[in-house]
Image (tube, rainbow, N blue to C red; front, side, top):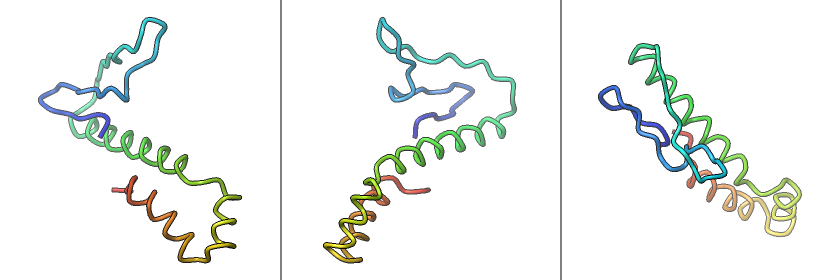
Length: 90
């Protein structure tokens, strides 16, 4: 998880640091929302990060078709399942 909420403090992990010329700096957050809204926003943000990482981890479609052609459906499914396990939806 990239953002967590605990006692009105947002913990920012190294993955969410903003790059700069002087090195990464933590993001500052000024929130005007309820705790429930914040928790929903954090969950949505984390899910979007996982979706992005998962989609970029899949091999290009040309490579997937090559695996399918040469190795068959089971080989293709095995290669995709590795990514699905590495980046689960929930």
